[in-house]
Length: 510
Image (cartoon, rainbow, N blue to C red):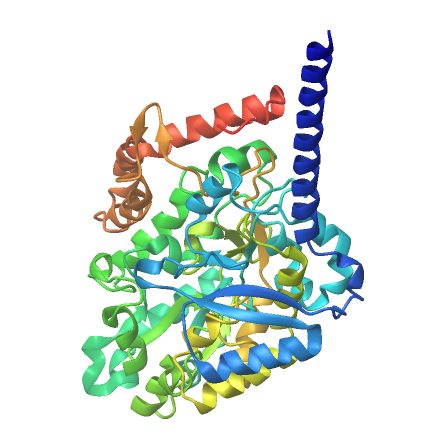
């Protein structure tokens, strides 16, 4: 009896000691988490330390950021450089970024990325610079569910809508009014073509009334978008709004481009011109292009190396006017927003190993302050950086900030205002908690990633080069082939998702 009691006491003692050790360990873990009561909305009373991933290593910029953030926010910033092949060197940073949405989403589902929604809710009023720069759209870009924010999408600080640029000096020389409709624009292109000798002299054979490349869905986006139905219902936005090509009206835009192709208003070899290649921009810089579509900063970014600077060097009197010329059935200028249109996207996130999410957010808020950006921009300008170096430190945006550096010009502001006048149609994902338009193309056990993404461009090019009188007869078969390369299955897949989520309320990932 005594031995049994003694054994039980030993067991109880061992369990008690184990419990004490577990609790002690738990308390130790809790004590590692920072107490945010010392944050007054701008600055911490006790110094915090965070590590931030950076693709560049510039001592002057890093010193400015480190010293300023320490002074303004009481945060000690340590920069973690990328090693070879884009992998962080040795230490996982508290604040990182990725350009691969799918990988980042996979990490989140594995629990390797922090959901920062609660921090944004609790401290949003202290993050004014961050929220002003990103806006609700980029802060909640990853999901329509506001309780989930596993990354912040960096943004260009100016409108990304594509608009039309037309040679203002050519309009003046020919006595033409600035166009505001598709018909007026078409008439201008015809005038450019018919007066090539007057406008270009001995280079008349180089005339390109309207520049188009082998991705017409992008280079002619304002024209194609003008034929789409802005009153499309929510289900069809989800099931076919992701690529536009399956929507009614899309083919009408291609038919107009086919007519313009047959009228020699676009390059005869447009389907061999790669976007952003010399074949695409040298004709503009050489003064041979009457009009083209692009984002509002296209001509003006990169200072002395900008396209407009090169054009002025070749043709002093040349100038482009930013216009909206493609009205839709409602008489509006509209742009359909699609992820794949964006040339560049950065997703800022905090790995699950991040020790201080609030300090990271405070840092992002500081880095989004226009005054701080201006100072860093000045440092970059003096040192003649490639501007991507500055982008590596200012994580929340990329490209020249408005009214900073060489992009500060009246022509650029006019282009910005033109872009702001366009109504944006967001192809939002309202029914599943995933990125609005980025879906893995794994359907019915087959992988369409090989053919599908490029097939939309191929459909457009093949339709535009059809011979006169062939469009109505041959486009249906072109579209059928396009659908067979993945678009049809993707449409069926998204229709199934709509039924599963909206009708049945099943929110589980596909």
